[in-house]
Image 1: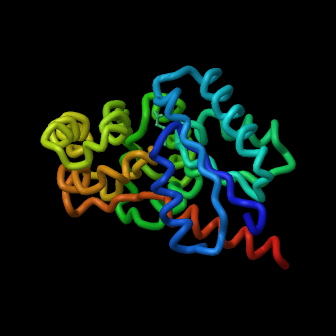
Image 2: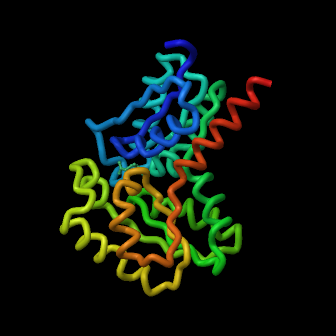
Image 3: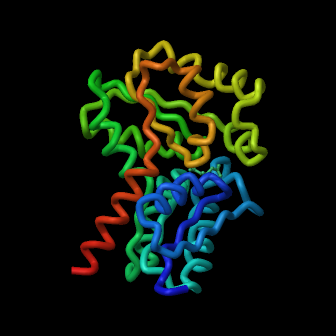
Length: 223
Ligand code: DGL
């Protein structure tokens, strides 16, 4: 490796949706990606276990001497973000939740935003807390089967449509104009989610935001 890499982790392949954007925006950077596929999903686990897994993930990445760590996982960002920042104060950590909030606030005209994510992310209440501070009405629902569907490569199968219709049925009645994909696995199901929720709902996938935030940080560090 030419320089210190960017360290990125997720519970599985979901975080690769963030890696793709980073490669697009910062093609010269080296990346170390860790997908904890042996222990996926994180979204059904307790806060304590998620904190432990996320700590293990960072410790693994630190062996490669990264210049920054990206938590490319909404579950780990929501439940372990604060703990990781306390445990590893010397490394800059970027998470996916704050980027999603910023983008949703910018896009939503009606101030009615939907959030879908894992059980752990939704029940952490993190999104509700942060969006309500911005005077936005939040409607959230967990979509746990989306993660195994993505891990199995079921991006546009009939079963995926049926499951998406089941999960999004209630949200469709809430007159939201923006929907946050609060799990990095979900961008792989974007086509299905967009069709089911309706073309008039704007979808927030924070990966580009995260890549831009990383770029800004690296530029600032150079100065
Ligand atoms: N991709 C992750 C997220 O963004 C985790 C999904 C899971 O392991 O349950 O939440």
